[in-house]
Image 1 (cartoon, rainbow, N blue to C red):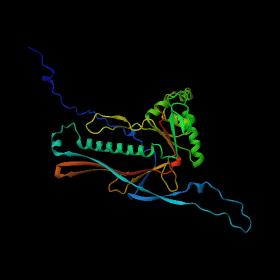
Image 2 (image 1 turned 135 degrees about the vertical axis):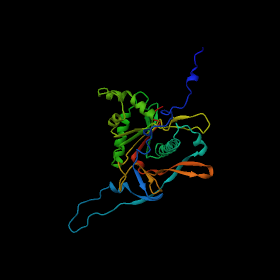
Image 3 (image 1 turned 90 degrees about the vertical axis):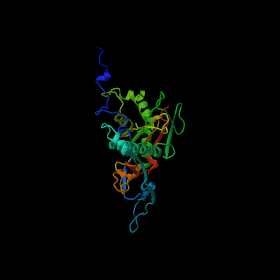
Image 4 (image 1 turned 90 degrees about the horizontal axis):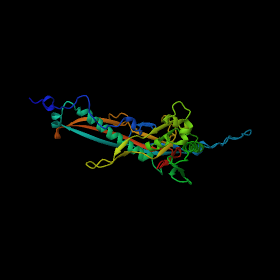
Length: 323
């Protein structure tokens, strides 16, 4: 008698303790970790900015008997902000729910998908707002050969000097603003080039592990906070072959980011979050509601924010840092 076939003994069913979804780790995204967040009650408003020159000029002088002290003041101007609202939704129809295996937690999956979509949008806006040439007072471009004015030798070129480049620019910015840059944001290819840079490896060869980490780079460059933009995105339209890549791969930004937002507190950038939006937490909200006309439950997410450069002189952008 023939032996039973495997299909006679077991019928494949979905496993309930495992599934595969390429959902990025939240630590890949840096948009909410670089600049201070400012919760605002209204979608649009203004904030005040003081002229830097007035605060670094001393007019104090000797006072002769029966004379007045020197007097002056400072200039204040206003800058507007506007928190645009970004949103996306996923509909879960009744028929799909009725046919779904118990493996699926549709509401959970829809919430995660909506959230991931919003995180990708926020990261893209952060990169488009801050990680580009022309928005900071200083942009330096990487080149393969000998650098000229406004240029530096790319980090993957033998003989380049990233330690000297970053430490010099920390001093340069401090010399015109009074603030030392405390934040460095870079793409994965930049980070990889620095991790394998001969000059950096030579500096750390006697350290405990001899491995280049973000913390070690922070110590070498004199920039306390180092972030790598690991987030990826698919830029292909729906239905086309996927086009995956890092959202930021080959650029870097060094800047001064205030530890906290506050009155008379300069910072290279601020993120305004519309907390006054009904039900919003940190400028975002997830809603679930019924749409009977299409017999579906809708999972909808929104984020309302504005990312703005506040002190263009507090940042240095390094364009094309690697080949």
